[in-house]
Length: 98
Image 1 (cartoon, rainbow, N blue to C red):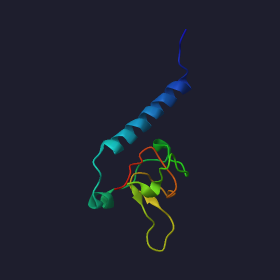
Image 2 (cartoon, helix red, strand yellow):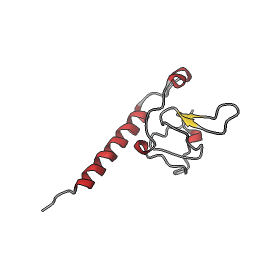
Image 3 (tube, one colour):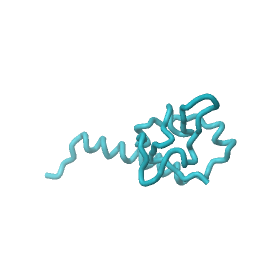
Image 4 (cartoon, rainbow, N blue to C red):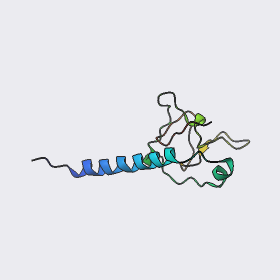
């Protein structure tokens, strides 16, 4: 009998949610500077698969969502992801700047 265990179903649901969020972020038009200024980061690092290391040459510092440190600070942030991030990190919502 082909049955799925509960943890497999939960894992698939989480993966689908991350894919949906990443897909929405990539499908959206590139945000303007004014739109970015008003955005409040609300996604958890786990929901977008954030990690402190790059993937396939992609880094947060080259992403449209990246928010460089404020003057006098060394802490970077993201317009989508809550909390501090690494400029050399990466997540599934990554979108090339420019």
